Image 1 (cartoon, rainbow, N blue to C red):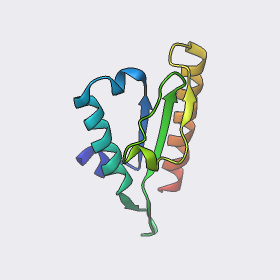
Image 2: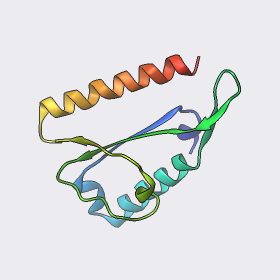
Image 3: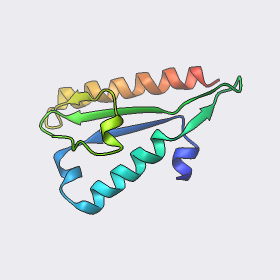
Length: 104
């Protein structure tokens, strides 16, 4: 919980393996629920919704369960493709840089 409190965004990568074991699935739901209820103040003391960014392996079916069903958009990634993973990492860096500038 402290990591989410100290953060400006939540990044998640969902794959088939993430949903195979109940304990992992429960932990994912917990973290998404925690992040989804989070609000942060920026430098101007403006309260805003916590940023949540999710990449989903194209071969993964996401269960229609709370809080995952509240995610508006999943970015696609081919987890077995180096090119796709590199594109995802570049997008993550770009988002992180944009958030860092916004939160100054």
